[in-house]
Length: 272
View 1 (tube, rainbow, N blue to C red):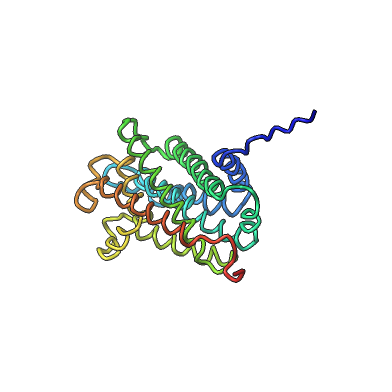
View 2: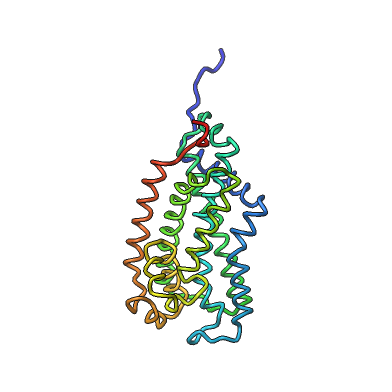
């Protein structure tokens, strides 16, 4: 007799992990994503090290000073910018509509996207750290407490950036316009959040605006990990404000989750 036993369907998580593998492969096949997302912070760290190579930043070299900002920027690019653009393109091409019509749970799609962010962000950070330590003379911290701080800052930063990127993907009217709409937003936040400049030297009103958004707290948190503790006197309030940073990143994570659930679309606006 034929075996009529019905095999159980794969779980949402297992399908999501399979999507993660696919998303990672697709990411590394895209030249634009590699250059403007994955290698962008690495290239800029090299440029800043070359331009400010002879400058002393209160006892640390240029590579050490700018490394935290490049790490924060890399996380934000890999999460917010990468997802906002890629999802807008997939919606425009009709891929999301086709996926919505398959038995795949919608949650698996988002697990795949967030999984891709985590994998690419970790790979980017590892490469940044190797280049900074072996080539640019950066002293990598060895204290366990520093790496514990890095872990929760990285997770909160990547998670909040991911859900905000998913929500923001509905803003561009088409996939072709996605880069033109999203990239200037990211660049503006980078300049205002102390990624490319000494944060304390920025105008007060600019620091006030930047403090509302997650990238500022992500960059400040990374400075607490990779810069000597004496540098915290240059921060607002004379401290790293890790508690405040954790609250702001968590609030943005909650806001992003709410917005992503409310505004996300599987089809183009003109599709009805």
